[in-house]
Length: 454
Figure (cartoon, rainbow, N blue to C red):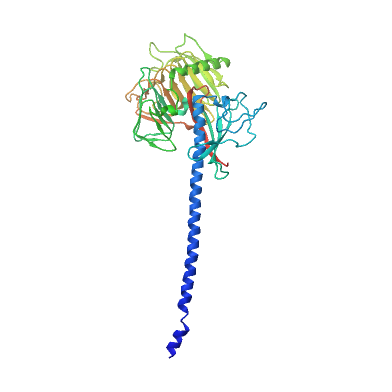
């Protein structure tokens, strides 16, 4: 009887448990619905954010394509996705219209024009033209879902015409890198005088773009956003094949500029000029005579009394005859020879990134046979019509050659005089190319890229 009474007292417990469990399940259901909804919202936001970023990139890419076709596009047209421009004096000019004013304008209405893309997103552009003494165009691009006022993402890029100093190697011949090679500058294999389209074979790691008028083989392992462009895609980046003969204009410009600062020399009685740079911002200049019939790169010539000069402020030094160079350069200078340029000893900037050296030879650029066993040099270099080479080959010199910089050579070259050869790209050349160094028609380099607040 006592047990029956106890059971009757607990007869409502089961009902209470059922009610409690039902309440808990209901609460869990509501919570799960909220979580799923929140995750769905976050996922949708991530998709919108990524697509907005891609829309902004599409705007940058389209403006860059316009500049490849027309280097002064910003002075000729207001882009179809660009905000309304207002000149210093005159009427506002809307997107897609011809621009007939100067290289100065404002955007009084903010982001009032959007270029729609097929995926339901759109972009806006605002442009800052180059300032005095600069070729850099500044582009601000914003992407968003069509008609939205949220989920916008904005990018800033600064671009300029490419210089040959942007390239670790630029040649009208085949270029090959082994599996242990890492390249940090652009690589370009062009078309030679016989119309042969050359290839790049790269089995290593490429940290910058690889271009070939022929094909890109390997393929390289690509890092830091690097891409490869062969015969079927290269025209999307470089409108026309790079023509070494177009660099002749640079020699003429350097000769003219050097003449303005009295740093131009021409004496047919001289076999070569010898320039020794000093770390105080000056250089010693000597007239040299070859030994017998020996080339000045084969046997050290006899040189006269040195005269000291300051490095020219405009950075141009020109020699009509062969020039021999060495030393530490304080300042920004390009040495150009209308014949050959011979490297006799270590040469480079005192402070890389502040000081810079350019070396241009109309014909060959040669490492002298009488250079030290171990040679280290740092410069942007160009052999316009000839080779980039050592005087002799097959390890005859032994030792190690370490080169840091950029190489442009019309007919290839070799440095096999040295047992060990080390080639590095000087990434300071990306923002500080040597003065008067040739630019490349219809190609651009991105100097700066970042995401900013819309």
